[in-house]
Length: 380
Image 1 (cartoon, rainbow, N blue to C red):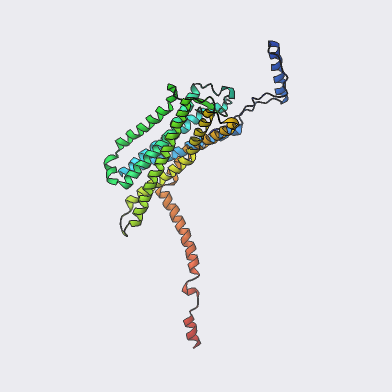
Image 2 (tube, one colour; image 1 turned 180 degrees about the vertical axis):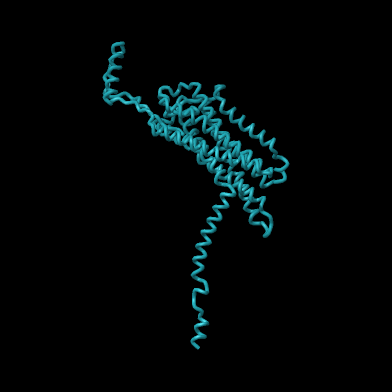
């Protein structure tokens, strides 16, 4: 979703030295215009291909989230199991959050890209748009991580303690939990409004995030530590809960008596598989930005970043590119990891294995070999 625009702000060696008076400034401007016409002084503007990439990425994300939202809403209306309905309410809220979080920051980044981005000398001049874009990235970054953690904890309770889950988890409490998640993420995103941290334009001037690379202060370090700490903790809790749920289901499957009912377990397996998919997607997409942000702000604050500033800028750009893919890949977890889809894949795979097995067994059928007994009898 992020596209890069670079400026050649370094002085050209072909430019002569001029005095500081008005006549010198006029001559300098004329010289720059002349060199620009000759092609010796260039200002790199965003390319059309980059804009196309941004538009295609946004289109893919919007279509994916709309399809997933339609599937989840339809399943929620038809679902009568309370545990499944709670999970679908969480999942629908997550897809809606991903959709809004893909459209709003994406539109702002596209606007910056079309206007040529912000010049490097203006990176520290955080305006209202930068504040809103940075707050949006923090808010829509924490919400999916918090929701994934809450969904994993809810399923872990439902798998390990089903009776306690049925008495504690209700639709009303689920909606309250979602409201608390949105409010907590909003409070973290609005900390710079109370001078507890700050947002700044990031290289190459087409996106805003927490100030991590230049003029960092103690509040900036605390803000990044809070943001990354909450994100990594959410991923860790989701990993533990999903592991417990998966092991519990596997053990229950192994201990299942022949002929016993397993319809209830199939729903649990589907939900846990989807949660594992969400967790893996979040880890791959968000861990780099969370870790790179911590590394950058610590080295910047201690002054040990040195000549590695360009490397840290590259790492931050890579991290935010991966993070934006989370809102594109999350919907495909619900689109592909459904029981109907998984059952079709299983039947296709089973059919292929069966065809191979039958073709191999056909070579060893008794009818394909002459009977040695018959040969002996005929010989006698």
